[in-house]
View (cartoon, helix red, strand yellow):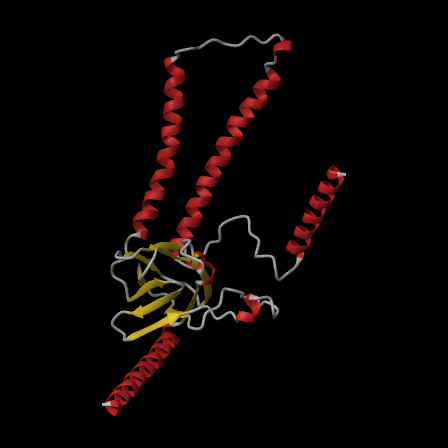
Length: 279
């Protein structure tokens, strides 16, 4: 009876999992490969990934093809006798040089991509990103714009009291707005614990560490909304730290920036008037 009950439980679990994956609201956007992203860095990372993938595929085909051919062609029942070539200098040179050349072929483009990632100079815009438990703060350096970005998913959705939106746990009240075709330098740090600022479409991820400032850059090639999240377990609210980057054309970005600056100035005037009235 215990075996029958166990099989029934397993079958029910598999059925439930199948139904869960089959629903549009519960399943994610399935993909079997990296995406090219929308920045030069993300394209380089994708191309590097594909290059190394195909090198690994070629190695696998050669190695396993040779093994399978040898096992079939040189079987003992066919009278094959194993060759003896212990301490063969020629063989040792071959299996040393070939992997060395393969590694060099991988290292050269990988090194070039890593060097490009670190070239944060000559940026047109600098944004400081500060992680908090559990939200992000964005400061546009030199532009007098500073705001927090919090999760905007309603509590009713989180507690399953309402239907979940398609951007469940991935929408914020204030998006990070940046211009397209502009080199943007990000300064990433934290005010409490270690976080990690990650936006896959931009091809970048940096740890936000208290007391340290990490740098990265991006140049978004087309307008759109690109989503990410904190990629470092930072406490009970880790799942509630989404990142939403909205890329606008330079003209629309300047209009947005001016409106933010006006609001900031109005807020300062209002605070000053309140302080004077209290005095």
